[in-house]
Image (cartoon, rainbow, N blue to C red):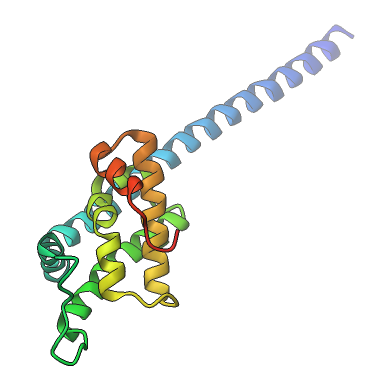
Length: 175
């Protein structure tokens, strides 16, 4: 009789030990998954940062927007837009559109993206709206959504406080 109880007790003890080991394994796997996801996000951010810093269209657009004068639109004598500049602006917007898609798919963390890429997007939203935009354009809509998300994240984390205060005090396109 005692051997039967001892065998039963050992069987139960083995079951409990197996459950504990399985639980520890799951915790370890979850931790490794999070580390892998963080590494993948870091690599993705590094690729976007490389593109942001070296892409000719993005850099030329930033330079142009820095010099942009609200009263002098980039038009030719007939009032048509300069197509080369328009293409540069479109590439600038598409960069941010891709970031927005990555955010929507939760491939990137909004706080990291905001810290690394949001400044120019927020600063020049109004100017780009006046230069480039057609209200039904999907690239513009995603860019605008990106800017709105980044304004919220920047305000919550106190990134670029002087820029955020200035932008929020002025009217924004399509808000």
